[in-house]
Image (cartoon, rainbow, N blue to C red; front, side):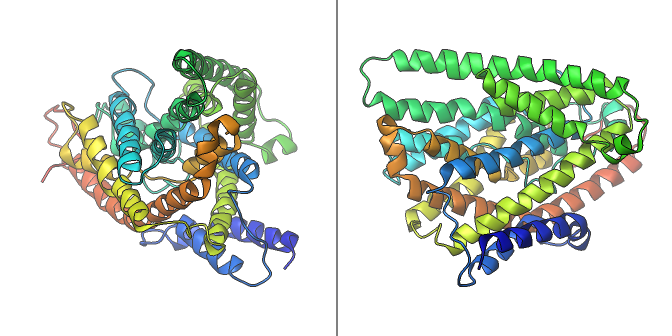
Length: 442
């Protein structure tokens, strides 16, 4: 079967799925990503279809997954109706400062102690599996812009909220996991380098400079694009047809400029989206921006997930061992939930909210990107990472697949029940002035 024909089929099904499937699968224990992966397995199991090898094509895999993630980060930033601030984002800071480092450390220790991985490889596994995914979390993330504005204005759940917390976490930890990916590469190279200067270089360059550049450039580009978007009225028919495309322009500019200057592009894109969202807080045009980015994201997501299914059909998981499966399941079912709950120690967030936030740390396309990036940038000095490539892809592929089906089958049901309870609680509020929360309690 010709590869071009397969590509046309994937694009067609991706468009069809983006248009029709969300309505058909609503409130059912089946998600769009599950459908795409299953389709990929079936399609590439047909004799004569091209082989899908993310290990041998790490550069192509890196760039394709990179594009999906940055578009998703723009959409995630535009969804957030909560003003940026230290107190307003308390839940996010806890997830980033406590939950993510604990998750990285725990997975790295499991990889080293139980799987016998080299310390550099174990660190990479932790960094790759730590970020939650903005692409596959549509059932648990915040809705389109302006959908939660009234709740936020009323200071409901000041500590955060379930959907806000998961969306903001996914937006920021996709960039903040990068220093740990670089740390894994640095540890691997350090085996062949005398002295400890590599650690200082990592802290200053991969930590301080790259994060600072991402934050600053994201803010500047987001602000400039916001001024351009909201001070240039749509007057022509062509402009109306392309309404919302500015979200993609902002995404590509923020990412490209920041990466060119050595910063973290993922971080810049999300910060640019937040600044773009902040500029005209209640403007209806944010829905156009979000919807355009969402359509592009869904199409690209379909392509990646169908190819992921094709890679599974071609033996991506062949190198998987039972210990690998055990560590992968532990990462989803034990490490993330426990790290999430530890991150909320001392918080006034209700227990029900904490449990949902901790449980739905979805892994996905971002993990594919980080792994492909590390392997594509590993030189002879970091040979240890390349040697473990097939096993790492098998473990990460299994974790993403398990997360996709486990969370995909439960997210809509759990969040539907959760939202219904919240709505009933808000509707029966007795007006005493007490602060309300997402969780009405037992």
